[in-house]
Amino acid sequence: MNKLNLTAFLAIIALILTPQVYAASHDADHGNMNHEMTAGHDMAMDHGDNGFGMKIHTSVQDGYTIEYRLIDMKEKLKGMPQMKDTHHLMVFVKDPHGAHVNNAKVGYLIEEEGSGATQKKMAMGMNNGFGADVTLNKGHHYKIKAKMLAGEKMLMDEFKYMGGDH
Image: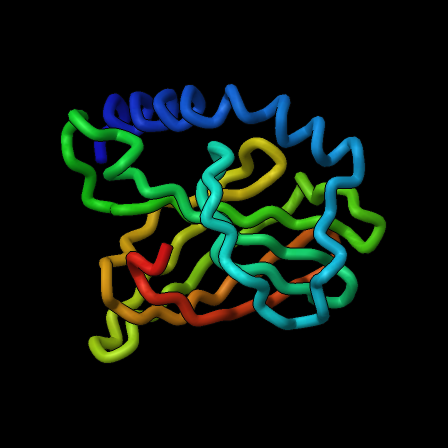
């Protein structure tokens, strides 16, 4: 992807996500947190799309809450030139006190089960989370691994996902 296409893509992402920033920060300020989470366990999928995509997994690691959301880029960018990647994978990390972790390095390793194909992606910080473009084809099974380095704290998480399962 050349610089012009990358800049245009990032501008589109910013336009998609910007209207939701107030709502997300408003919820966070009022402690709108799901207290049904248990350490290391998956929660039911949230089929609502709040502009940050649909929730596909939540876990707790060492007191840090890690929430993954998936934005279907082909759906969001209908009528735009087709992109190689199909989705934008976001991860939101909250410390044990419920504050967003905004200063971290986040990377994904996505392994397609069966074919063994892998994707390694470095996520970019945006809107209290970290996101990267990924390809998750409908009906394919994936193991998604995330590594987050926030200061001295290293968090590692993984879960299985079936493409199109949302």
